[in-house]
Amino acid sequence: MTLELEKETKAIARYVRMSPYKVRRVLDQIRGRSYREALIILEFMPYRACDPIRKVLRSAAANAEHNVGLNPSSLVISKAYADGGPSLKRFRPRAQGRAYQIRKPTCHITIAVAPDLTES
Image (cartoon, rainbow, N blue to C red; front, side, top):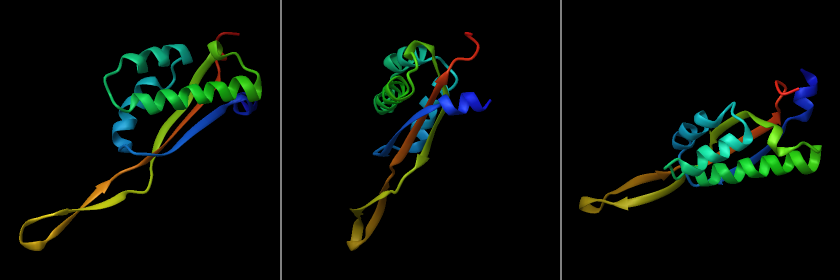
């Protein structure tokens, strides 16, 4: 078990201008899948969240290849989650001189990859 945790590599995208709820919907689809399978799924999903997630996934695989020396074809997504970041606060003018606050959410996307232990 400790061997797997040592080999786990991650990448984080911070302050992505997107709601964490919408990002989690996509992350739930790729969690636990192989690296190549997840890339194919992200390529053809119709959601806007797929682009930043694909970038983070490629970065995590590159980190695993460069820093730990793992083969990208043997990687599995061990963790994938989105935490809420700070909200940008904007104001919308309304009737009779009032102003309503609009919150534009941001999120931090974290993806960790590990070698597939079932292949060996």
